[in-house]
Image (cartoon, rainbow, N blue to C red; front, side, top):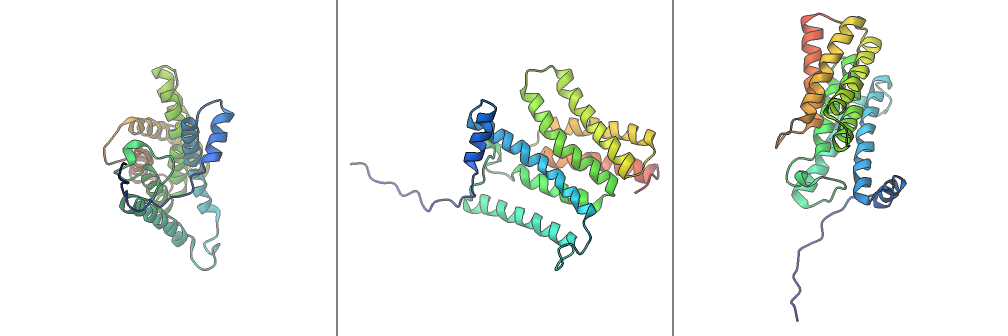
Length: 226
């Protein structure tokens, strides 16, 4: 008779939402692994809602200023990650390479909060929308049977369009400056999205690298509106 092996206490679990992801996959005629990928894309795109921060009055949350609420939300993400890495908390839809390093959602959250709190509104809108919407698009195109021109060109065009509109309409930059720097930011963003680092995630670099370019060249060098 085989002895029972005690594997220790069960890991903490977050609600996986597995049934929803299964339904999501079935809607596209795919298996649950595809549902996980689609769920990640949806959650990633939802990061754009952080821009609501700019239209909320500072006393919207009554007891705390909105900056404090945003930082508390980031702190909650960090706590979840500490529980995952240190105490076995199970978080759904993580990739294998994230098992023993900071997960992408931590890098993503840090990038969004830094952009919203530290950048001028137009720049923040440009880089947040770019990361939230174009990163999933680039990932899908990379997995699709499309050529390199389409796989790179479509994300660059999408990011540039979002950035130009944000810089011109929100940041009040002159249209030619918005076009030139929006395109430069798009090329840089798509480039860093494709680079792979062991301990650094593109969800952070895709937000902060274009932000540094736009702020350094547009605001500091050219004196464009903050």
